[in-house]
Image 1 (spheres, each protein chain N blue to C red):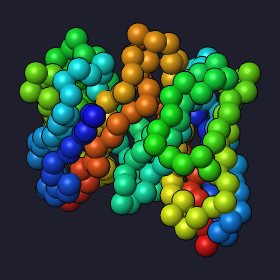
Image 2 (image 1 turned 135 degrees about the vertical axis):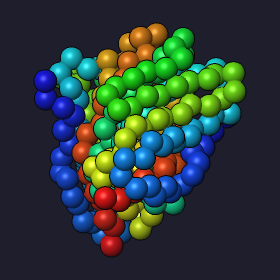
Image 3 (image 1 turned 180 degrees about the vertical axis):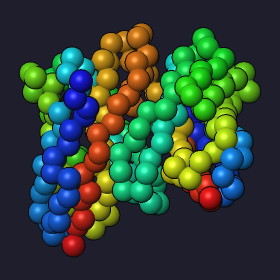
Amino acid sequence: KQEVTQIPAALSVPEGENLVLNCSFTDSAIYNLQWFRQDPGKGLTSLLLIQSSQREQTSGRLNASLDKSSGRSTLYIAASQPGDSATYLCAVPANQAGTALIFGKGTTLSVSS
Amino acid sequence: KAGVTQTPRYLIKTRGQQVTLSCSPISGHRSVSWYQQTPGQGLQFLFEYFSETQRNKGNFPGRFSGRQFSNSRSEMNVSTLELGDSALYLCASSSGTSGSFHEQFFGPGTRLTVL
């Protein structure tokens, strides 16, 4: 049974720092991996989707990598800003349609100015 | 393109009542999935509908049900509400075509409080 883990559960950094969020999964036979951002009490915003055949994806200051063999993905945030403060979640689908996502518990990031 | 919309945004019910939540997916998307988010359990998959048929189901009791209409809009129903059903209910839409591994796009959620 696939399990997704995110460590640390919370992270506090000063503005401008580069940081890495970690996501691990127990079954390496994944179809893709998606990173989301969630602001308090709000829905999820999709940040990056990495297909199983890819090693990384970039969007602006965000870079996500995927290593299926080790069951790990990292989300790198460059030059963090207070507006980056949110909970970051990673998820993998349970089927080939990319649905029925299995989520980690998330990392809550706080960036202070 | 309009995003995923969910109504209502907030609901307060009492134990034993039933509730219906609605989700309109992104235009052209045929898959709608529902998730429950609680502080203790995190985000858990409820079920997915694709072309009006339930295609996948999570591990929730039969009190949780759903349906999808021909325009891809979906509703989920919870009967005989319990205090533990208090949660943020999120729906997500995608093209849902098998093998295409498309992104899931989420709505703002419906906050359900059971008293």
